[in-house]
Length: 410
Image (cartoon, rainbow, N blue to C red; front, side, top):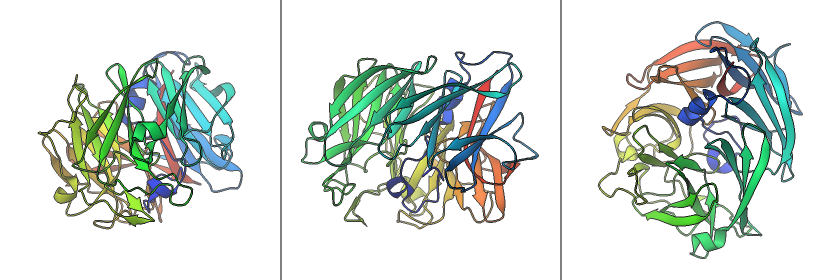
């Protein structure tokens, strides 16, 4: 789950994994609304030791470019089996996966001394989508079988309170005899775009589909969350993956969608279209038919697993390690969606056990993605430059594998 990218069909097998905050989390982390405002920044690193009943430890650091930090006798313990995280309005939210039951949502911020302190605790439904929208966190509980109603909740990120709710019949949304399963939610302009998979949801092959080669994005207004339109295409497969964001808005207001083309039926991959990037131009609710970035072709046959936005059209891609498959040890690459170039990352460790893929941030100057890389020889925070595709080693994290990197101001 939260051990972000071991890749072996992580997005479809490991449940309830992490949100790749990328530019959204970076932006929201810089907004006021929680804690104090001295103009200083503190990084939050979460690490798991694998101990029973403990999801992660929350560690804090002023500088992640050098030195080391440890979970031994250090950090705030997060209980439970799985936790997922999101930063919004300068508050850090730790959501407990409740194994189908409601789970605790613990909110933290930084005090004037830069110490991470608990702000509030409340109960919320275990959800599969959670994203910062305006000053809220939008969460969505999506059924994979049985009842077909998805429930959407708006959480005020400043007050840590549920302030609204909406519902969507996922069978009606799909309209093809299957059901829609949202992969994520992204704010695009003043609307919420929610890509989804079409799944059988039959209790036997829940995430299988008879529609592997189509792309859908449901468009909702906000804050009402009323469905306005479904954007469709058939040049690649669905965007993102289970618990994995596949749609990002850039600084120009355009949205780029990332497809791994890994749809399956009865556990056999059936996608015939390539892993690719598509585009929705600012102010439109249609895919740009003139734009198609065939990543699988330019990478030599590899498929996208997950994506982190850096800035100025540069994205960090985590790629499945086996060409043409949805498995294999993770490989990292940089994609420039403006110039449609693909470059493998250099200077990274040779063997990657996992790489944080949904809880990442960008550097202060917007040039690099900051990620946690876990290896058989140790675990480090790395900076991946979006222009040069060169990895630079930073802080070592001892006593546990890195599961998330975030930051707050105080």
